[in-house]
Length: 156
Image (tube, one colour):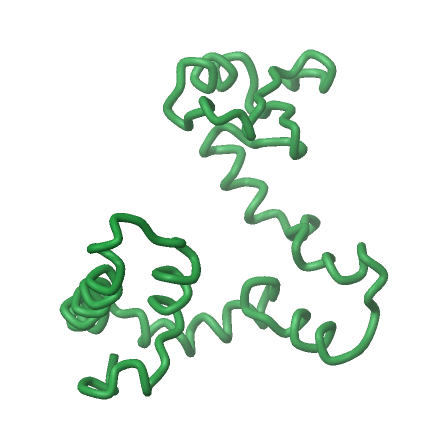
C-alpha cells in the first residue's frame, strides 16, 4: 500500500543530529517505504530501492544536472554526459566491465601500504601544529598526489 505523500514521514537529513541508524529513521521505515526530506524523497527500504534502480523508466537526477542549469552544449556538457557516474543502460555496463579489473580486491589490497604511507606523510606535515585545513592539507593531496611531492616514491 502506498503512503500519500502528505502523510509520508519527514526527515531533516541536514540536521547535525540526524543519523542513518536513528530511531526516527527506523520508525519512518516502518511507517512507509519512503520519506519526505529537505532534499526531496528518500527511499527507505531495500526492496523498493532495488526495484527503482532496475526500472528503465527512471534516470538518476545527476544525469540531467547540466540541462537543469541551462547548459546544453560545450566542453563541460560533453564531458558530463559521457561520465561513468551518469551513464545508464548498456553504455554504463560496457564501461563498468572495462573498468572492473582495475578495482579487483587483490589489486586494491596491494595498494593499501602505499596509501597508508601517503596518509602518514600528509599527517606528519601538520601533526606538530595540532590542526589542519582538512581539504587542502589532506583530502586534496591524498586524492590527487603530485609526482613531484613524492620525489622519493613517484609511484604513490
